[in-house]
Length: 108
Image (cartoon, rainbow, N blue to C red):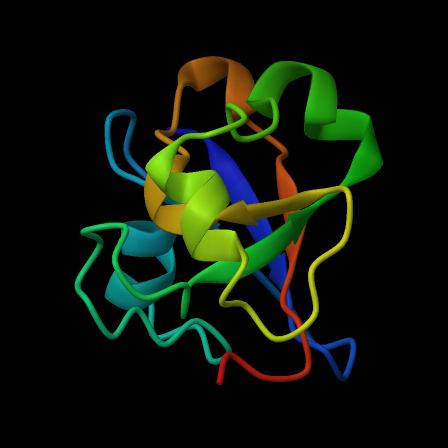
């Protein structure tokens, strides 16, 4: 099972196992990781599961497709960066073992 490290804005790290096929957001919610609110439950409708993907993982994880619903929703996120993603849109694969994501200071 892939291990994902979630890093809170204050630097606190949480490394958990997330089953293949789940989203990075589901992994956070099911493991009580603070910093990902997921108000819409993973429907790509709220931008409260915003994360920054570690630079070393951008090639594998990718960026939102321009014009996609995810790209549109990110415009509602408080502070986006070039490595911003909605964690509900990142489906975990075995190749993501070791993935690192960081949370912004706030989701609202």
